[in-house]
Structures are given as C-alpha cells and as structure tokens.
Figure 1: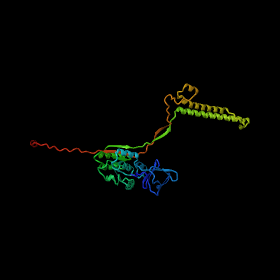
Figure 2: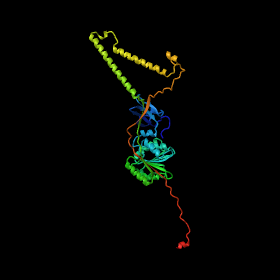
Figure 3: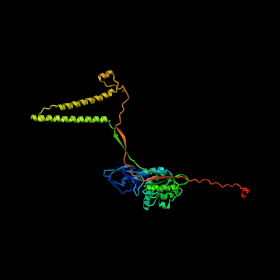
Length: 398
C-alpha cells in the first residue's frame, strides 16, 4: 500500500496536513501547483523531500506538512462519496470480528473505501478482502483508488447486488461485514460464504433501530448465535497545563494588601492636592516654594524602607535558621562554614504547574449501530447402524 520510500517521488500519493481538522490528499504531478489559504506550492518542489517535511510557502507566509498516507490519515482526508466509517467504529469492528494478518474478509458496501483500506492493511499479504459495491460509479472510483494505492493483490472489488445475487465465494471467509440499506436480505448469502470448519463472525452496520430489529430476526432465523448490538460514541477530553491553585488565605491576604496600597495612594494624592492648594492660596507659585518633604511623602518612604528591610531580613534569616551555627558565629553574624549540614529533612519545592483534564460536555454524533453475531459450525451426529439381531422362527410365527 502506497510508497515505502523515504523520499517523495513523482506520482506518489501524499497527505497534505493543513490543520488538525483539514487534510487533503494529493497526487504529486510535476508541472502542477497546489494553492490554499496557507500558501502557494509547486509539485516539483515537493519531489525529493522526505515524508513528514514541513514546507514553507514560496511567498514566506504559511506552511504545510507533507505526510505519508496511512489508513487513519486516509479516513480523515478521503473524498466522500458516501457516509464513511470513522476510526472508532473501524477499530471496534476489526477487533470484534477478529480480523488479523492472514484473515479472509467480505465487505458488502465499498462506498468511499475507508473501511477497505484499514482491512487491507490488517490482513496483509497472506489475507484477502472481497469488496462488493452496488453503485457502478462508486465501484469504478474505488477500483481506481485501489490500483493507485497498490492494493490490487489484497483486495478484489466487484460491482454486484449481493442482496439479490449473493457473493462470489462460498465456504471461504472468516468474517463478513455488511454496510447495506437492507442487511437482512444478505444474511443467508453471508452464511453460505462463511467457513464451516470453524467459528466465524458477522457484523451489520445500520443507522436505524428498525434496521437492527429486522437484522436480528434474520440472524436468528439463519442460525447465528451470540447476537449483540453496540453503539460507539466519542467523548473528547481536554488536558491543560495550568499553575497550581493558591490557598484561599494567601489570595485573601493579597487582596487586602492591594486594597491597603490603593487606600494609601489615595490618601497621598489627597494630601498632595491639599498642600498644593495651600501654596496657591498663599500667592506663591508652587515651583518657587522650597522643596520640602510632605508628611505623606515621608510616610511613604518610611513604609518602603521598612518593607525592604523586612524582605532582606527574611532572605538572610531563612538559610541561617536551617543551619546549626556555632555560638561564636551566631554572636558575630558569620555565615556557617561548608562543613555544617542542615538540621532536619530538606524542604521540598512545591510544583509550579499541574495537569488538569476536563471532559467535554458534547458527545460526537451517532453514526450507526453495530450488530454482531457468531456462526458455530454444525457437526452432525454419527450415524448408528440398525440392529441385525437374529429373529427366531417361533417368534416370527407368533
């Protein structure tokens, strides 16, 4: 599937990553150009670049990433011809049907080929996928894509109405996936295609509950067991890296300090305004007055000096309190020597940020119901020979 080379070559299929939700497939054709709101790019400039490269626009505004296709990326970027299966449903179906390397699988309803690419990668070169599509135009488009992506050896695509004509294989496959408007009409044909020498499985993809009920009745009538129905929903979770929340007491104290600072500033402004008014009333210009420190200015400088002294005392005293000082060193204020060890266990530094997860309130919309069932091989009981005991002539006469 797709190119396995390290570098991009002409004719390769690549995935252009524009944003997290906007991906676009592109066939590298020298001479053509790719234009988007993220810039202008020539196909010839992409040839020879390693897959996964970040490519800047020729005008210097914007960039794109050129990625190697995978079934997951193809599901996000493929051109929609029908409603497709997304990764959550594909992963669940693949697991529940026990699709693995070497498995042989039938898919009825090729559509846009989203499920086909994932199954083709899973079964590998030793397995095989038989895909059937009723709509001729969609079948032609899907066949062209499979050929371009190098899937001809793993996938056989047939334009066929399986509800009426059945499948082209019998007693061959390990599992069947039906993505049809009326899957109950194809249940008997699916039973004929499944192997009879081991337990096999079937899955029906139906958007409506009425379809599920009719499919369950058809599975029961056909002899399938272990019938279950699931609905796959995605609930995104947002994870963020935020600072540690401070205690309420610390926040309250900071608010009180801020309020005191605002009040002090207001009082200083009032005192300065009254002083300027007295100077104007005296008839002397303010600029001719000698520069004398007002009571408000003096008080502000005093508060600032006290705060600075307290901070310096805290910075100096904290390390000294953790050390065992000599009486002489304490008396003269000498710093402890390097041979002294701190008393008590070292203080742990609290984390500055923490991770928080938040479940998003909205759940992604319903796609379809998945109805699973198993077919257990039937082993006929051994035939018993009729009794050949001799009958006496007397008993025969009687």
